[in-house]
Length: 398
Image (cartoon, rainbow, N blue to C red; front, top):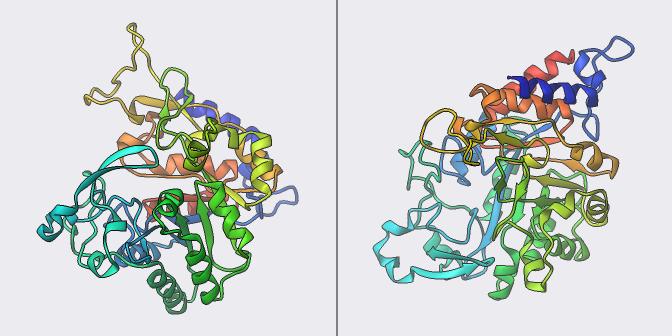
């Protein structure tokens, strides 16, 4: 529990007014977000903690739970249609393996330098993709909906978000990502022009439109901006894992650096983006950053005499539940100083993904990030993020 107290102490130092419950004049305390508004709850792939991700059913559930924004990854079909899947490899999130007619298309290739075996979206037409069903990508999550919900296109999501905004009377924003853009460009299936065209056709090509466009590859964002995209742009910042001894970020293919950097022989890792110089560079082409949350609050494990992490909860596995959080970095304040908003990813409820000092309650994790001034959170569990935000705002007299 001591580590959580340290983290909260550091948080308090950064947000004395925000954490006090009242402002200098006795009114509600000022929020530390870049624009002074409450942080957004961004439904990561929809309500993916409950239903197969990136399906209309998952997005509907997220909206019902109160999400401000629904998030999706875009990959391309063989006939050049943008669909919502997190990976080109359909084996990860669809029931393609159960479709005997596609058995011969299974293959082993490299995606962003990583060797993968499966079925790939670029080998399927949209009509074929529409015969597949989405599946849960986490064994701890409900499996009874596997195969029941279909894969949707980017255009279908745009139409859906507009319809839901009309139906609910509140603006539902969308948050598309150009996924593996170099991979698809090399296949002759570039996606950026199609993203820009769809946004133009939707009447959303402005900074105030209900859309955020994200990518791990700076070149993809820069290209779309050069092509006239005026929406809010977000540079994603990844990492592979955490060194349990030190709390330091570790890097490995394919999440060590933007793949375009790898192709160009640039051996820097994503961590250069979170330096003041890196943030200043991002500000030249983007409006915000989407860092892995460990760049803001990392974790450390207990190390045994043999130099290896200890399985504290004795479940036979070493994971976040065997670690505790440490004092936050200054990334949020640094990004805000550069004029960039901060949307960290990804917040989840499973106990194996929560540091021990959060006491198996995801709301305790959100509380720290909200108090630090994040502008939004990517979450698989919209309801938990909303509940934590409600408690946080109430503590400020809002």
